[in-house]
Length: 173
Image (cartoon, rainbow, N blue to C red; front, side, top):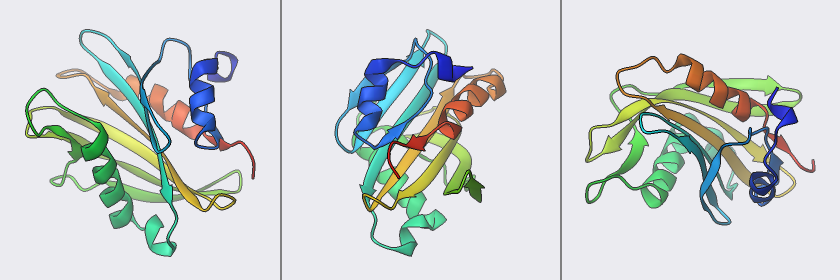
């Protein structure tokens, strides 16, 4: 379904991470540089956000759940801001994320599923991410998605984001 409606501008940004993903039209580029990109679709009541980020691979420890969470929190602190001073997205410590090792079409993926929250704020919601080693470039690449839709069911919105995350493929391997 999503493969038929890729946004070329977004695909050009994703190429900086050596990946492509099926992201439907309507998503906007919030921010992009060589290590982090934020892509979202927002309404007055909802947010569906996809982060893509990369960092150098330093060994097997980089694919351990604790390191993935630590790196996630580092990137979110650096690149997300809330409405208050010193507010940013982080992984909720009260609900530690679940981690799964997945083999998908020959790719080894670490999937996280958990809860995000706003440090120094009052927001939160579900997130999921895929972390994968780009062996050719010796980098870790992460696709991380979250939903904000207070007091409403988020399942269908998360499923849309999951489809995008699961579509992640390296451009060259």
